[in-house]
Image 1 (cartoon, one colour):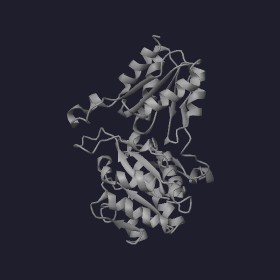
Image 2 (cartoon, one colour):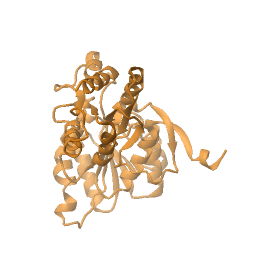
Image 3 (cartoon, helix red, strand yellow):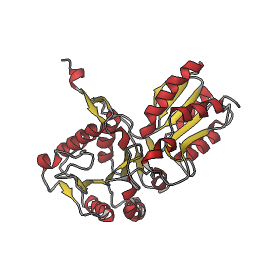
Image 4 (spheres, helix red, strand yellow):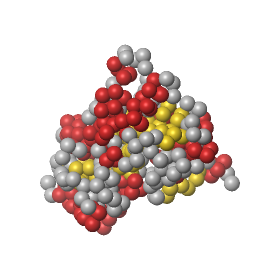
Length: 331
């Protein structure tokens, strides 16, 4: 086996995160994990499975059922030199910790005149299409992106999941990783030699010339499938994985739009008040004279996430993205 092949392994997205946590803990004893049922159970999705046995209960800590306590404890540990990784069990459970995240975690570095850093990583499984009950399929990324001082990333592949985990833990700023739970079982290659990986830079995952689709997290595979289907209509669609929600890599998207003249932004969260609107405004400001049509958004509807029986009608699919592409070409 060549050295290059030895550094590449095929993993599920969930196990890529496990490996990222494991390697980070092996490299730095100040990295600790805290969350509900992450120890003996290994987490609801078994992402932390095996880490308690390997690293011990002082570094893999089962917490009480209290998200504010999980984040508050992590903030205190970070101020004392640790690099805590806090797991929020489900997206809809994060709101009891919203105050701690937005008024404490995001602000302490600035409030202390840079005396303190708070390198806390918060892992949040998010998104739908898993047949779950209420508060288990939310997409609250825009609520946190509005708060300055937080970095927010989301992977769409096992490779990105591994390196986003590693780089987020190494970052001196607080980072929220929104993990697309419907993609936990997605398999792909992870290149462990990709040490220059930048989680805050968008990636062109498919080249095209006629229109650009930007997606992130769980919708990137859907966007790629839509671009493939558009070939039958003679259209060449470029697809960009945004990767970082905050900071947002607008220059990469703008360069694509200058080339294609059209932009469709897709995400699971409702379009109203969502990240697609922010990107649409930024691109309109920068690329007004390059756009051949308005920037169009495809997302969830402005309503509570529905019951499992109807969630497929709520979450954007290939047809809804292609319909937006068709509308873009009507202008």
